[in-house]
Length: 308
Image 1 (tube, rainbow, N blue to C red):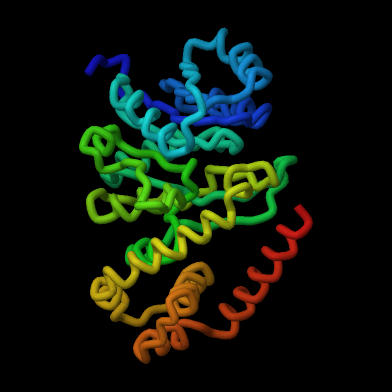
Image 2: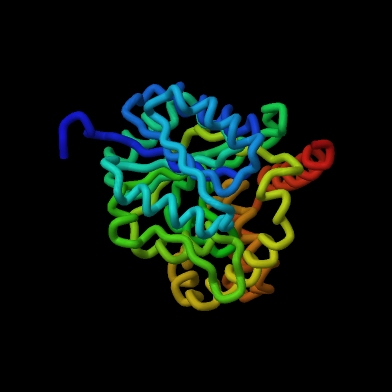
């Protein structure tokens, strides 16, 4: 590979009528401290108003490659982006949702962290923001105990999808891929994680480098119920299919933080999993401080989402 392409990072963005949110997302990438980047924007059939807005914005910047296609939906758009990535000269790739924002040092820090600890994919902590960029929630995705990455995958995706940073090899080896599961279209990111978890070395940098937007017109809001329904079905199958592994890695007792406690409680309630050893584990891990934090976290989250 040519020296000029060393540590070159491709930013993968797909959009559909995201308006000015897309421009803000791209601007946050253009302001990155790591400058050796190419931005791939796949427009999945936006209307003419948005298309003209995007073309006007990207035509003067050589770092941006804008590709317009007819509307094919999120799965095919994701697959198309990976095809473009595979043919590019980039060594690494970062996902980016079209209505989100990245911290100015996100790419630099994720790249250095991935190389230092020899990971193949890394996520990061993230904030949830409203339509006006106000932070209303912090999401900690970093766990000191590595087993909790698996525990989290039993009930939810590992990281905000747009916060991923990974090696090109994962695309070349068909380890990272997007596909439906029978008639279940969503959650495409969760299906991707479960397919790759045992095949790639995955880590998380303990820094808040991503701002995930929550607003009524966002994709996650629009398909919230379908996503939750699909997640419930797929996570239940994943959990019971790998139950022996779950028991093996959770055999020891240790102190838990509030986020780890939430995961175990979700597992217990979602799957009606009340085996004695597991209940004992949860009870031993809880204390008055953790319980008060859990209550505060739950109430605060509900209230803030109510007023968005």
